[in-house]
Amino acid sequence: MTVHILSGTGYDSNCFLISGDRAILVDTGTGIHHSTLLASISKVEDISRVRKIILTHCHYDHVGGAQQMAKALDAEVHIHELDAPPVREGSSTVTTAEMFGSRMDPMNVKCLNSGDLLDTGDHVFTVIHTPGHTRGGICLFEASTGSLISGDTVFAGGVGRWDLPTGDLNSLIISVKRLASLRLTDLYPGHGPCVRGNADEYMKEALNYLGE
Image 1 (cartoon, helix red, strand yellow):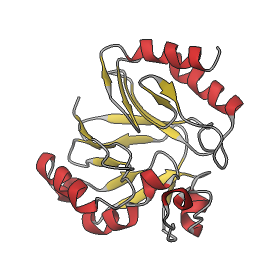
Image 2: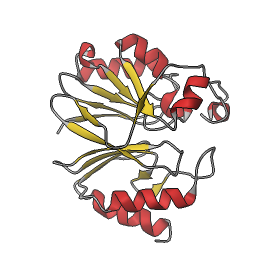
Image 3: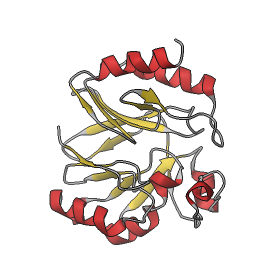
């Protein structure tokens, strides 16, 4: 299993490069450190193989750099259908770009749905819809290795906020319970450290944090 961890700089989210002949980049940060991120990608993968960019949700610290990165990689950008509208419309409020002192320019994206499969040639990830942090948040799960790319749904020591536009606590609790029912080994969250080997323990912590 090869998931390259591209740790976030400044306000940027963590980004992840999943290896394969059809490699996938997950999240792009704000775009402020575009050159640094592109150089990091180039060190671990032939950029001509990166054909898709997957956005775990619509917040600016994950999607702000997507348009610039898509041009650099000649790649398509995908996001869950419920988080697509604010990205397409360039809503600086719903994408939280305003919180970062920036604005969200309208961007063309393709839609993902829960259950979609993402095949890089090396790995096959399943899209899991996990609303709560945003209405259209997703996680990516690779069952054979128990690997979860969790966006801002769950971290190594907590969960994502639910007080931002389209966030909802009850939905987040349901989503985390669903993830906790999986057989997880490795956790790759949108912020903070990654976990390898005992991700299931952190899912229990997340449920405790939520009072479940």
